[in-house]
Each structure stands twice: as structure tokens, then as C-alpha cells.
Image 1: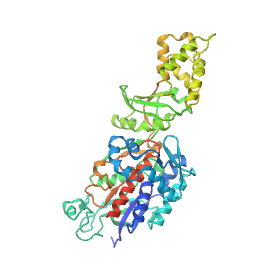
Image 2: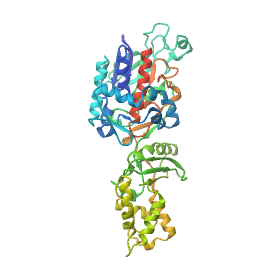
Image 3: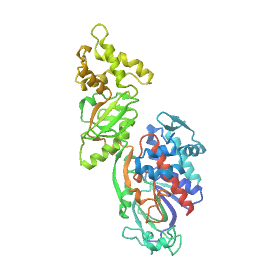
Image 4: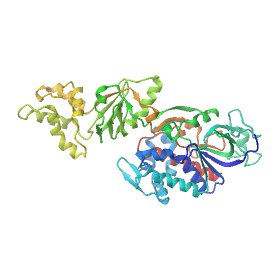
Length: 466
């Protein structure tokens, strides 16, 4: 191999995390920053996010936002979210010319409603900071280099005791500019660098270039990568009656996920959508990480269920009053009419739409009642069954729809390998991992972009410190 130029810093992956890290590091004075992107353009996944609107962060405060990443993620992200809170993300985008506006469910979108504006602003910031952006530059292989600058056997020698003795920066004794990493591009080109940021994403939205390449590179260094599974993905149901409800949406539903023993795993109050394959929408998709992990552990479909309460603000006593009052009406009113008339004012007061007849019939069926059942069929025991069905329609769940429809990846580089205050990889000086490559995932609502930006900001600040 001929003479190879050594770059000071290479960032692999020009998505949300990689673009932010390159921009912020270069703008703060880090020299010679090269940003590599395998696809033909920066921010391909940004353009596809939020229905092309890009839910770029959350209205929540840093601690409340962090708690939504479950215990382990919350601990890791505490410094990142306090260092770059959601409000500051909005302020920085405003400085880039991207105004933002709040939306229901703690969401924040660009005021223009255009993900392209977000992507273009990041790209302009990257270039204005002096970053060299190279698209269509896919990395095929990544290796650490030994002290003589030769490719090592899969470990980075600068994590050795000798490197640690040289100081926290891990600079080799032979000079601060010695290369630590070597990148082999699919074009045959070889690049070397002293500092390397891996921000090449997970396995979700593979069509945008996130095909999980970075996981194998990390494992080649002897690092643990926890199983990577689809998250924020629709749930699959084997029940035909569920598929028949396709197209029905519930805006304020409570979804409770139960395992095969009937034990509650998690719950979420978020919109829900019945589909031809099962359940979608923020509620079920936020809970999908638990189903994906169960499918992985079982090695196949599970026998779980999702209990759907379409109106959590309406309690059982109110439903009982509706049914009792309906029984006192003259004639022979059907239960569908009694429920429809009785629920109408309560739903309106709660800001909810009427329950479609098809869905109401499913509640009756779960209680063992025919769609045309009259009030005279409703004894005390059956009334109790109907109320329980209305407050918890049980939808069988067998799994998820997989990475093809997943918005993010759960799993990734085990957090024990990463310094929470800098995103440095422990034992591998000069190496940083940020964004979706980390074992971090949060619910729908701009949380995963917030995680990408915040971990990138930590990384950039540490690079500036040298």
C-alpha cells in the first residue's frame, strides 16, 4: 500500500448524529474534519422521518425526556440531555434558520412542516464550518493500527497501559498526529485518522443506508453488541377480526401490553391504529420493543396480548350508568344504540371521536354478545363482562412487522463500553460512538433525534478539548 494521508478526524455516517458532531466539532475549532456518507446525500433518514415532517425533538425537559429511555438509557443520557436539552436543540435550529413549533404529544416540528428544511440546514452548517463532506463513500472495513502504523489483529493498542500512561488523550509516544484507525472504502481507497466517530446508524430504514455496518466493526474490537432488534415498529396479530378493523384509529387510547402469563409488561396512552396486519400508531409502536425482545428470546412468535381501552378518561361506573339507564328506555333498544347514545357526550367532553360501529361490535363479541343484542340480554354478570371488554379489548399479539417497518433499532454497543460524559469508547482512545449505534432507544415523539443530537454534542465537545 502506498503513502496514505492521515486525517485528524473522520466521522462515518452523515445522519442526524454524524452531521451534528462534524458541524459542532469543526465550528468549535477541530481541524481537518472529514464526514463520510455511504448514500448519495446527507441526512437521507432525516428526510423520511415523521412522515417527511421530521419530529426533531420534544417539548419535555431533559430529565423527563431521559426517563423515557428506560432505566439504563436514562442513566446514560442524563449528562447528554442536560448538556444539550431539547430547548437548546430548538434554539440552535432557530439560529440555522429553522423555526420550530409544538404539536400534541410533546412533539416539535419545523414550522414549515418540511424535513428537507432540517436536512438542508444541517448540511449548510456542516459545510460552513469547513467540514469536508464526501457522499457515496461507503466504508467496507475498519481496523485499529498498532504502534508501527500496521493493521492490528482486531484490537486498538492505544487502549493499552502504555497509552493510558501518555495521558487521557491516549496519544502515542511517537507524536499526537499518529494514525490510530484505518478505513477501507468500497472504492478501494484507504483512509487513516487519529480520531474516529462512528455514527453510521442501526438497522432500521435500511433503504436509507442504515444497514448495521458498524456493529461488526465494533465486535471486531472485542466489544459487546447487544442483540439488535426492531423498535418503534407495528405489532402483528394473528386474529382475523383484528384485520377486519383495519383503518380504525383511536386518538386517546390506553394500550396495556401483557405477556403470555397475563402479566402487564408496560402501558402507554397514545394514538392507536388497527391495520390489515395488527396494530400500529404511537401507542403499540412504543411498546413494540418488549415484543421484539420476547420474540428474540423465544426464537419465534409469542402469545402476548394488548388490552385496548379506547377512552381511559371514562371509568367503569360511568359505563355501568349508561347501560343501566339504557335498560330503562322504552321499546327494545339494542346495546349498540344504548352505548352510542350514552357515550356521545362523554367522548365529546374528552375531545374524542365516536367509536365506530365495527369496533363497538368487537367489544360486544369479546363479552359474548351478538352485534344486534338487545338490553334484555344483559344480566348483571354479562353487563360486567361488557364493561370489562369496553375497558380492555384484548388483541392477541404474535410479534412485530420487523425491520422493514421499524423506525429505530433497539440494542447496539453495550453502554458499559462508553463514557457517558463524552461518548468515548473505553479502552480505545480516539474512538467515539454516537446515535443509534448505541444501545439506546426511546419512544415516538422526537426522543431518538434528541438522543442523536445530544450524544453528538457530547462527542463534539470532547473532541474540542482534545
